Length: 355
Length: 202
Image 1 (tube, rainbow over the protein chains, first blue to last red):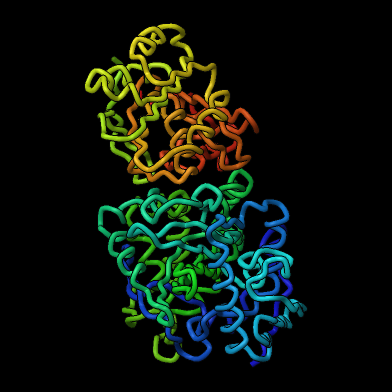
Image 2: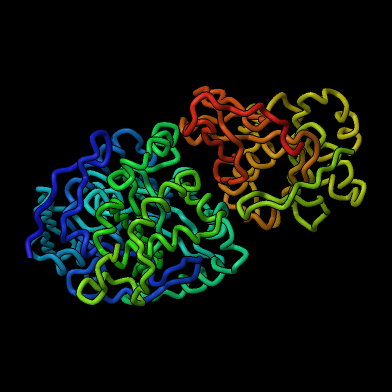
């Protein structure tokens, strides 16, 4: 199928919108009516046709506009993309993984022609047609990590593996849920997760690290994570928090359906072949509450999850002050009926709202 | 002796121990202010260390209080300088000559230990070869996450960023690369509502 790319913004007038197609394929993250941390990893081996899990690097209607937003962030703050000196090889690994995956998964949008180390990369949606020498940085306008992630949705953390740990030694981070690459670069797995409440005590990070250090080439893994964002703002960075934080206070009973967004991260994990690094793409999907509740099951379930979430998590995720407004809005979309297991919308089998 | 029991905190926050003599071909010691006391205690455990010790010391507000004591240890090399920045070229020069078996001892404020440890790490010396002991001021070295400027010797929470002027709260999240804790705007969601600063750990 051909994707119609939206012309939209994630700042200022916030013209971002999800089409009915994007709403239906939204990666709803709750498989039951409650939420607690878990090591919710599964293999990333595709998924139902049309779902965001189907391709290795999902491309959707927001692609072109998201890449424009990333360029704006980088122009303002080049520290959002950094790579410690030993990570250049991992950057080439990532460039290869993305170019090969996208050209195979979306042949109508991307082409990769390889003649030895002379490579030609065609990115039709962004109007790019570059020829370069693989592994020769002087033949690209940016380092390999920055070059390819300026053309790929989602943030990217590139992790070096040594001393029985993973080290965040490179990354492209412009669509983050309030964490700073510039501050966290060089940290190990436990250090960069240090501010997360409860999960350390539950042993989540020890188990997750064990799992991730054993991810093998050709056998990627994935999980979902989530938070809340007022306005479809991709760049909820700590760097700019003093500018966007105020938007959280602008939520009202009248505007919450349009302004409040569920923010879901599709996190995937790939072992890279030459560097043995682990790349950790963090793809952000946003959906307005008013669009989410058009799926009756999701409306019912989101209400129950948000209502029953432990206070520490609501605080950490930054919406404790707005939770009463959210519950009030969402309760109108919950009739108390049971919900089917699993994350899918189940539009054909779940009853419409009974109130 | 001013010893502090820091409260248990998150995984990125450094923890400090007590300096103990270790066998080694060379011993690099760096301290500021009351940190000199930790070096004196170290020497009292094994006076033999000093024949192969290079001490870099920044007295700060303690003035001459510890200088005579350090000289009396007869270290192989003793540097007493006015600031960490002044001592930095010398520290880097010493690290450039470092061999396997070098032991590193850091003592004093968190800011000094953090900056020295970052230099040591940048020279390729593993964290395991570095010992630390906190003495003296509880001040913290803070990075403003917004403007990236570093404010040294922060003793209150919140505090004013010495570069951009934002009111920042003091997090325990710590970067060893930057040798700094993270400061984040405290009144972003309610501009002007800045609580009275309280002294750290009070």
